[in-house]
Amino acid sequence: MRSSWATLAVVGPETLSQRAKHPHKKGFKVKADSMNTPAGHTPEGGVIVGRSDAKRSMILFEDPQCPYCRQFEELNGVRIATTIDAGVIAVEYRMRCFLGPESVRADNALALAAEVSRFDDLRKTLFAAQPPEGTGGFTSDDLLELGAQIGLVGSDFVSGVQGGRYESWVLKREELYQREDPQGTPAAWLDGEMLDSAVLFDASKFTRRLSD
Image 1 (cartoon, one colour):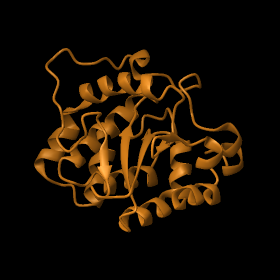
Image 2: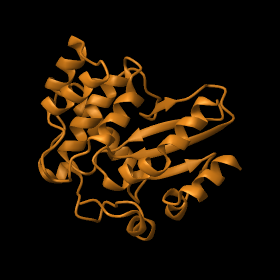
Image 3: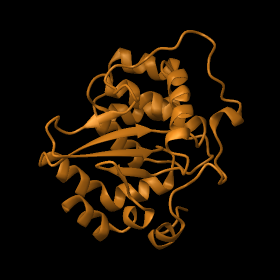
Image 4: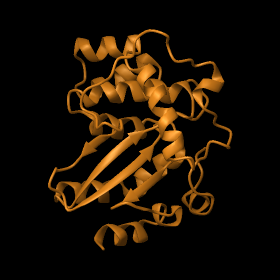
């Protein structure tokens, strides 16, 4: 069972020191072969959703397996999408995978989706179908089924999911993100200013910050 909103508002984001550990500590090793790098990403490994001339910017760290991130999306996702559609804000999503192999597989699928401009569609779909932590969810079959729901059925996406094309890149990126975002997920910077978890998990406060 996921934590309630009231609990989240007090506890804050899921951190590396909680029960979820970095994938490397679970035997999920970076492959020794040359690393594939996906298109459609910023130099920092994020994916920008929104217009290039948006007045404001946000960097948002999420892990697709993180229940706190799902709660954040349930609280604020519609407001963020509306603000993006209005051209007010552009959000750079930097997807993490410190919750284990499930997150690595999901991030690999998101990287593939970004190459065909379907990142945000798949991101929302993954959060809506998020399995409980530590249950072995987001299998290749799960991800292909979820991708098919939004029309991601091409052979390149299918083979990329089945072969874990960008998993090494995902893990290397996580090493960088642990230094940038040591507190865990979700974490957000609005116009360069970090937002406190009390803002992230209070829809009214979050909406006011977007409207400032």
